[in-house]
Amino acid sequence: MRLFGVILAGGEGRRMGGADKALLPLAGRPLLAHVRDRLEPQVEALALSANGDAARFAGFGLPVLADAAPQGPLSGVLAALDWAAAQGADAVVSASVDTPFLPGDLVPQLWLAGDGGLAVAECGGRLHPTCALWPVSLRDDLRGWLASGEAKVMGFAARHGAARAGFSDPTGFMNLNTPEDIAAAEAALRA
Image (cartoon, rainbow, N blue to C red; front, side, top):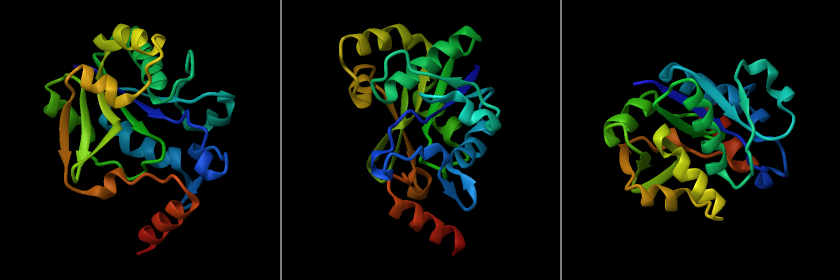
């Protein structure tokens, strides 16, 4: 089984005042570096889903995949599935660039929960749909889903009976969406 990964960084960062979340510092390093360091050891190859000038990510050593038609996180997942399929991968594990504390066992737990099928992370009864395992075999259906105007991650996941991978530590899925969230994460790291 060949599992690839993608960090989803295509959002507009509205709650961060339009800042590029991937490049925002946490403990002196960009958020993207934290997520890369957590996800990269768990997959065979890793890419970044981001729109705009790819040169701003040149120092991270990741291929940058742009959305064909930006429609939210699923557009990034589709770009990653196309990239992974071209290299013979079986599935892609996605994670959002604003989740710098991802579990070290994210990929194996997603794989085990869905037995290689679509699986979404769950912690404390809450789903984390951008942290998921996406089989490459779903890419044509996903392309059609997006072309029809649908863009909800959980809608597509439900359509395919996504399994739920249970995690116990909510820190692993902490989203840093606002400057206050970054400040709280900084304080937690200092403590």
